[in-house]
Image 1 (cartoon, rainbow, N blue to C red):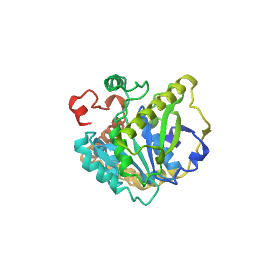
Image 2 (image 1 turned 45 degrees about the vertical axis):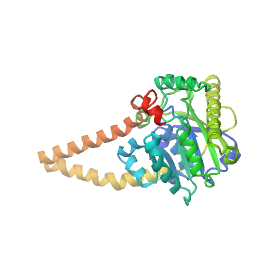
Image 3 (image 1 turned 90 degrees about the vertical axis):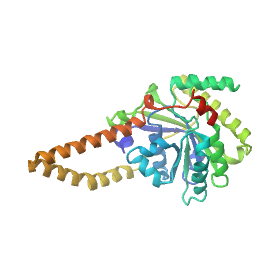
Image 4 (image 1 turned 90 degrees about the horizontal axis):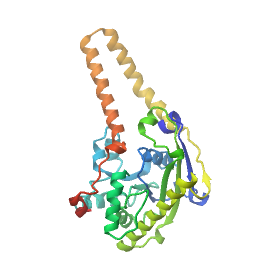
Length: 315
């Protein structure tokens, strides 16, 4: 609701109509670049517009479990969490993915193959790793971590029908933030979407990893095209907004905020210093919790195990 109705952010797809016609009608793995603070929000918006928001899944870092509301909700929605250290994640990831093999609704499973959000410092370290491994350097992405992708594809083979490669960028070189969305700032998001049937992806782990590296070289070429032309190649489609996000928000706002407003009024008219101070403390704690939620998305606060010797060994 904040993205669509409050800030009025626009999302344009660059893809074929034949690909769009399959949205919400098959189990898929989504590969999305991780450059922006609101990339997940743009993803959620597309899921909602094509009726798969309730069955959207993600391979997420375990730290998100501590985030108020979102982390707790994801725990009950069968989101697969990881620490990004394979020896610790092996059993948890396999167990979580195997539970999704017979998921009853069409599912979109999101992977951030880069493992962490893009920053210049991380990019420099990542390209050092690429050079040491004899891999082509990337300009707009970090080197993808192949283990998560190959494992997910292996576990969900026979369930997922395709891999959607999604490359996100913003008009006029905007650098969108969640705080900007909350403040009502409008952004223009462009998403290039390519569909790859799983039959075209190698079964062998090494060949599958090589396929992913090639995919990221193609994603880099797409971003280079966007930098020069201001758009992605291919036909454009603007999916229609649905009214359900606004209705859902208004319903919960009415249900939850009305009693809170009445309670606040009763507290202040009571004249009790103790009640008033207690209520003010509650508002401060709530504000801190929301700020922490926003802070999780901030690029400057994200961590990375790139450059960490132990993490390299375990990944």
